[in-house]
Amino acid sequence: MTSSNRFLNRLLLVVVGVVALGVGAFLIALTLPGGSGSTGGTVRGWLAAASSAVADAVAATPLDPSGGAHGAGAGGAGAGGAGSWLAVALAALCLLLVIVFVVAAVAHGGGRTGRLVVHDEPAGSIAISAAFAETAVADALSARRDVATVHVSAWTVRGRPALKVRVRVTAGAAPAPVVAAASDVVRGLDRVLGEAVPVLVEVVGASVVKRGSDPRVA
Amino acid sequence: MSTASDTTGPGAAGPVATAPAAEGLSGPGSDVTAPYRRLVRRESRASRSTSAVVVLVVAALAAAWLGTEAVLAALGRPALLASPVDVLGALTTALGDAPGLVVAAGVASAVVGVVLVLLGLTAGHRGRHEITEGRVAAVVDDTVLAASLARVARTAGRLGAGQVTVWVSRREARVELTPASGVTVDEQGVLAAVRSELESRPVQPALRVTSRVADHGRLDA
Image 1 (tube, rainbow over the protein chains, first blue to last red):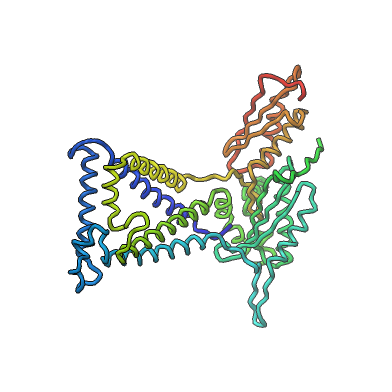
Image 2: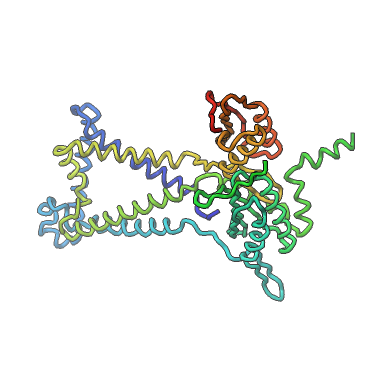
């Protein structure tokens, strides 16, 4: 129930994947045998053209136009175009990209909230902590025999608070009665809060580490 | 006729039937269920956040390296690995010296690209089914469904703990029965019990129940 933008995740994966695929195809095509008419020859022709175009661009853009005579062009070509402002621009672009990527990576997750209900009234504002609903629901459900553990968390979904109830059932327990019981508990919570919040119940299995006891009631 | 339509009315309007109960206590009851479809969809599919974060971190590292090389190139200092301004020239040299290396790099890049495109385009189902309940949205792990169906099958067929295995996939529940040697298994009875369990407590997407009885029984079963 995190607020991560899933479409952007997938768009990023597809775009980076297509770029990597293109680079890979280019590198493989470079090594194909053949003369100037074949695929390999054509791609090698592109590489030579692009290579000389980059060299020309670097030579034509000295960092210091007045001092360009002291060999940034012809003399520095072997050293990789020392002193071209294109390299400085590239460095600035890379710095920008690093910031964007790190911010985008850190922006994942999130969406937890501490306030379940907020009422604004003339006398002031009333806030009900999410911890209240969390303990209420967990206490009401954990008494059941087919429930091993209950974990409740509050999240912001589309700008409004919502509860997520994660119920770990014992091995072999039917999920539907647990969901019905959770539904009853939430209806009771509605009456207490005076307001209905969206609730997602997630029924998961007995953990591998701590096995739920199998109630043998055949 | 009017009584018939009255009785079908509330039954047909399953999800709506709970709306009056919610509305009874406060005004906006119907929009409580509004985010449920979205919530269930998001909980049933992979978010791809892990893959995206890995790609972003790798891209940030690559950009940092490229930026460093660019600064070194601008200062006229020797490059760490390859200067960004003559990387194409370096590639041309490598093509003559070690074409195998270029092919290997190309294949590696293409494989990474295919994996990323597949990650981006496939649905990434997380093996969960939805149980429709009026007030709450509910998703259930397939392992929980399989365990509960296995228990139903075991009770119906009077089988031991190791004699029933249930596999639940997106649209199918497969019941595998291992009979005790010399004893026939009531396959139809077990199937009927599992089917009626799924009919009384339906999940979405709906499950088709199939069964298979092992060719060889087991003595210790």
